[in-house]
Length: 393
Image 1 (cartoon, rainbow, N blue to C red):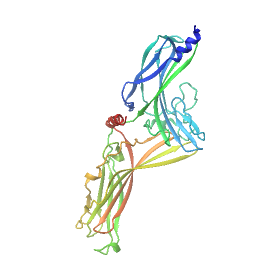
Image 2: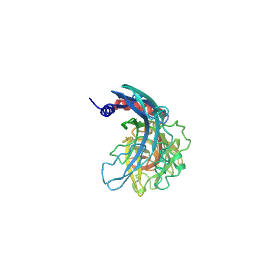
Image 3: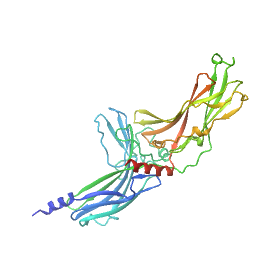
Image 4: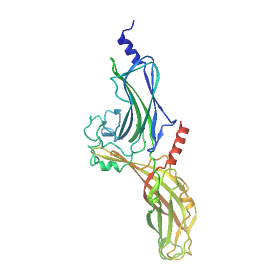
């Protein structure tokens, strides 16, 4: 005959906890609610003290062996796999909901054997919460208080919750997850835990700014390179980006190029080459150092175009616009994240444009400009991401 204690231990070990989300793909935006059910399977009666669900967010920066790891962490700590790292776990997001019992009625409640479901519903905050004190008061200050000038509340209120990005091998990783904890009561106290990673993709209802971002350059053909005239041929090129430099993921780039003839010349000026590239800059911060990582991706490239931009007979001072059909032909890749900043990780972008102009048959002159941009995502882009997630699975 098994003793009562042995039966209690056996019944507790045969309990299983699962998280069941209400949607098929775990992709959420700041406009969504994370909802679902906690499933508790137990083969015999079990004493339940509480069942809690926690929505957590972690922003981890990895500065290499021997350097600090700064993590904005919401729930259970993760240890660094490399012993040379010195982890500093910082809280980015933590929201906990007690799903059972709905109110404190006793020390514990007994559930019979079978499968029990407990609904939950948690919303994302609009801003990071790493400046807040721990709800359990185990942390007397905000988790980012030790980072220089980052603990001011007003700084965080101007930021948005960052998107999921990176993985455990990346220099910068932001991960969101749900944690379910079933605490057992009675004589034998313990807990059962499970975790599920979710993908967070913040969106904005886009209202295009009316401002233009413009970079102006001069291109010239020196007299020694000229076959037609002895004076220097000079043209002004304006590269314009509409919407104040705010670009939408998955949408065409609102780019325009204008060329102005500065002095009298007889050359036909043609656009021979065009290239657009997105440059991603990630800054990784710790208490004592900052590292910068750059990643670039080619968006569009065209060569041997021979597209007439300014005919030789054009009057001096004339301003001509290049055809828009090829400038915004490609869309901004959805593989990038939106622009964001946390206390230990920030990500910004530059759009690099290269134009190759040719004066008749002279050597091509290369013009290069970089435009600062701010990337956001629209609600429609979230639907495309979900379709891509399904195809990837």
